[in-house]
Image (tube, rainbow, N blue to C red; front, side, top):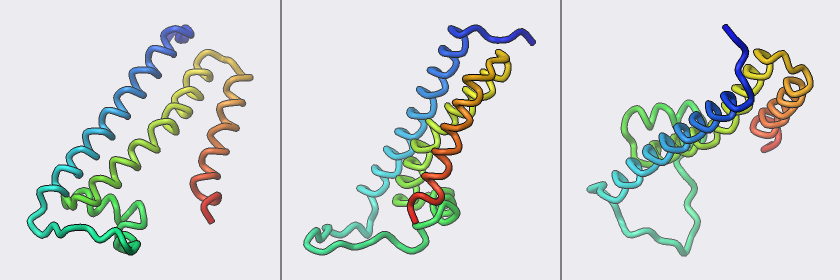
Length: 125
């Protein structure tokens, strides 16, 4: 397999980012529309803060809720997709730079990925 040119890599990454953002937007839109049309929808009380259900505080819970077509779960699943899109971009860049045999950019991208993953897992604690 021939190594990709910089332009081919850029075009492929741009397509991947457009796809990820589009899917995230569609999932959030579907969840939002379902939330607005929910038969048990009550008028929100914004005078007090109400946290989300405990089941929607983990990726496993959000994924399960989204696959059961829970409106709030769908919205949060769309946001997870949106957050995952730039992470997938960095992973894709690492693969592309490895195929181009560009050690400097492979290393820089790997450091960026480590920082992203650290901030998502340990940085919130």
